[in-house]
Image (cartoon, rainbow over all chains, first blue to last red; front, side, top):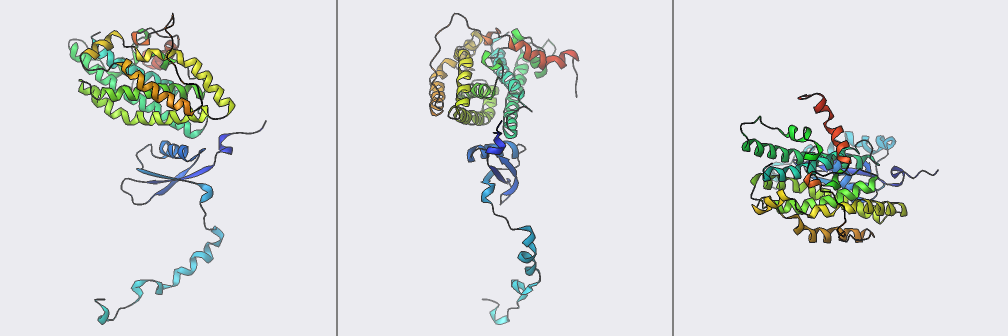
Length: 99
Length: 258
């Protein structure tokens, strides 16, 4: 018999919630839903039961592109030791103090 | 029983019995998120019933100060089925997902209109409970209406299950719009609203969704020779089983606590 379960037909969605005091939406988890409206309501029912948030974003997981973990070395390490990329590294001469 | 608390008990019993029926899906939902959604709705309804039972107990205690004070638990767990005033629609078996959705759909549309009307109740306790409950009920309306569309305008199987659900549940709808005697008394003193006045708006809203869902619209039932009045304590056989399960613990161990 052919498998036709919702979790195999329904896309996966990532859920982001912003708290009452927060400024940004934080990743809260993921769920399966047939469409955006259902995903929104499922996120509300599953992830805001305990007053965790006042705003929800849902995105289909296929639309999220992540950096590859095994490329993390070449992607991020070079930035570790380049202190000249910070504004504080530079001393402004007094003449420019009020620029 | 004096008229006012009986009307509050009717509202409370509606919420408790439907909440209990919905809670029977917990752990058995078709999909995890919907299991949680329906359990949340059940909790909303049971919460509403608690508020209403507390209000009813307060009123009844004020009327009979010489008797031992009643609590919400006494009203929920120690009354027999003939004393329950819930609509017969709400005690029907859950059936499949379609039947549960349709029951929630029919009732929540009605409950929203009813509670909106109760915002103007002369009873400040009822008005306050209505205001708090309306936000929850609006979500129940949204959730159930969307599911009616998904199932009605879904696959051939989901469509036929919705048709079966309508055939099973539609006969219980007329009771929603006929006021019981205690209800008439409460309407007369400004604390309740007339359910018959809600029929037109309810019909419009419900039929709009049914049409979207490619389902046949509801036409008022002809008056049958036989109809039950749960509002007056005349229930189907299902309520007995519900109460046997729900009240068992309190009756086996009276006064038990966690």
